[in-house]
Image 1 (cartoon, rainbow over the protein chains, first blue to last red):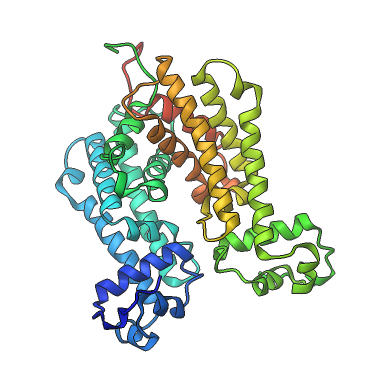
Image 2 (cartoon, rainbow over the protein chains, first blue to last red; image 1 turned 60 degrees about the horizontal axis):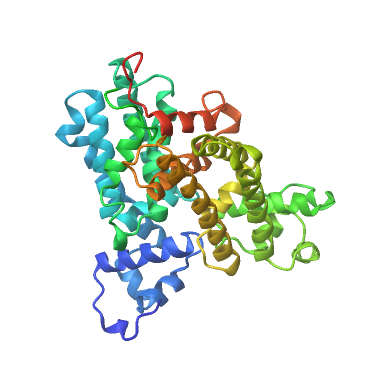
Length: 200
Length: 200
């Protein structure tokens, strides 16, 4: 992973973060040392400490980036007004775009386990997001737009489990079949895969 | 994680594996050292080496256990004969049972990243499983039982993405709402969440 001549690259905090996230995703956060980060960036550990106080600060910056984007979705007008089922559809589609746009950051966020204070905080923020979505699902059930066969929290977990699984297989390079990940997820979650006779 | 007086417990290979899997899932495979395993089991590293040659051998034993169970599903009569959509339903429901029954082992399998030969092998086996399922999905589309709006490989990934996400949130202790994980997954994937007028 070391870049020949990389010592001559001026490392911006942004660039340092991008490389750190790449290494965290490859080796796991716990499995990554500051030495690994120094090797991957081609700059010294003390140069890294010039930008951040610790490995955990890099993790916090990275998961914050993903969380800020994903929570911004909930503030968009289409997520805040209108029928619950339409707001839910918007949240699913917009979250899919965040996942694709910020793939390494969202990947890291979803792999966080909770061994540090930062990880605990990220898990709590994720639960907060899930609670908002579960409330939308419950409201759409109350509106009569969603079926009540699957309990709202379970439905939320399955819906976002399906979407979030994309961090494990989404390939930006061959995005043809997955061009609109959000559309495919919403299609499957709302209508299911089973073919119905025309007109039903 | 150390167990007081654990040195007096006779460690069977099975029990050693169970503890190792627990630690791998907590700290990540890369982030776990043989020292960590010795601490968690309360036995010495040389006692561990009496059972296995390496950390990677523990990983291989653990993911093999999950893979053997999951591939056994494909050999069951209900997965091999009958209409493709019914075979698919069986595979989803039986895979959900494997996930619940072998939760720590399946969790580890799904977190494998591919940094070692064992991980590469496990990933290849997972891809093999996905190919078999994608073939079933494609056949069910050809039979006219599944809609062709979502491409079969993408549908397979979303279907199993949804199911596999359960390793992150399934709680055996409060299995009430998730009692039949496979039924909920199949319900959502086949019929979707959207409520349809009675009789359609």
